[in-house]
Amino acid sequence: MNRLELFQQIKKKSSYLCVGLDTDIEKIPQHLLKHEDPLFEFNRQIIEATKEYAVAYKPNLAFYEAHGVKGWTSLQKTLDILPQDIFTIADAKRGDIGNTSSLYARAFFKELNFDSITVAPYMGDDSVKPFLQFKDKWVILLAHTSNSGSADFQLIESKVTGRKLYEEVILKSQQWGSPDQLMYVVGATHASKVGEIRKLAPGHFFLVPGVGAQGGDLAEVSKYGINSQCGLLVNAARSIIYASNGEDFAEAARKEAKALKEEMTILLDRYL
Image 1: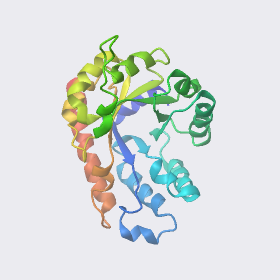
Image 2: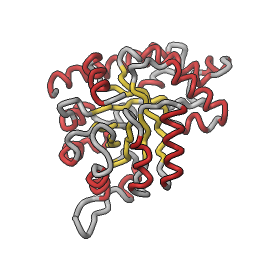
Image 3: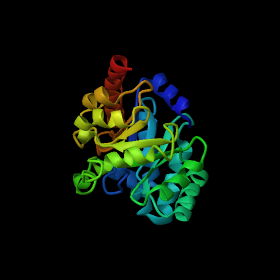
């Protein structure tokens, strides 16, 4: 999916909601365990309930890889039922030497046909550039994440430039790819920083996790993060997919997604 197609989807739905499919076998409703493929059945019902409001879905690969071949099968079946106009994100956080990254890129972009993949930038340009060789595919680079340990390295200041490490990552990586290829992960729990980060990458999309169960402020993130083509994909996972652990889980997920989408519609009208 290219940038224009993504923006058109955002305008069509008046939404920039990404639903995280962090499908944990220990958290899904117990009645689903009778199904041959409980992970897929959970995802199927979540997607059916929320696809009206979401422009993207983000499976976290760890929840599938943990089940070996069966988990990969569940993931593929999930991808197969997603609407064609939905943006797909492989939350895989890959990043290795060039030839290995090339194979990761082939796996996720060719075999699984994801639109995008999260990539760790620590090993530098040759670990990222192989992912940038695919037309209409995206690298979502980890920049300023929402986890508590993000301060361990991301906030270290350069003695040469005075910039923090995550700022160096954002600025340097723009030499590798364009706003049509690169997005950045910017945690919603750092909402006060979103405006500063937007100045560093005015034309890029941000994938923003941490809204919902992690306490991120959607209005604050949107105020400082929305650009002329929206420029945001805001991810919510637990607050939507685990809104209920009963037989009404899909309906509860639908209500949560709808509420977020309606707030996004108001914010788009205000800032776009």
